[in-house]
Image (cartoon, rainbow, N blue to C red):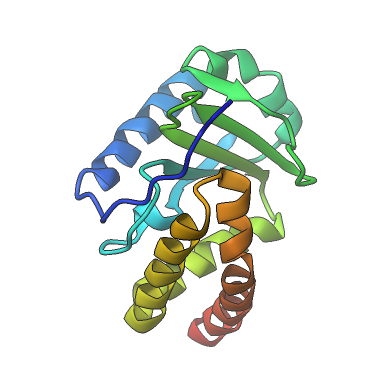
Length: 173
């Protein structure tokens, strides 16, 4: 696989693409196990440059029930990758060379749910950090357009601000 990272300016169509995909997922899986479906990642932050891939976080009551429904997710065009390196997650993606969607699924109460949502909300509330993150992403893709290298380049920034976002979120509650 020769995927390359492309970072684009924010596209006003991304929120609608998320809403459409959310409806497709609910239609395929029903609502018994799904507790929430959230738009996360850079495509969920207006004004932020991003890879044109819609990141979705799905919160479920039971991962085992989800595993038993993986054929329904596959019918939507997703590839199931299991935990894919993160214990307690189920990861799916659509598109091979040209990814369109990433679906990260966690069971209710998993700390990763709060972490993802806090980081998104922190970027929404802190435009200066959002701008710096956009700069980091542009630098990362110039340094390497190979997905693993691109992700590594951004990892220190993300880790640092995820922690700040969690503290910030607690102060908002």
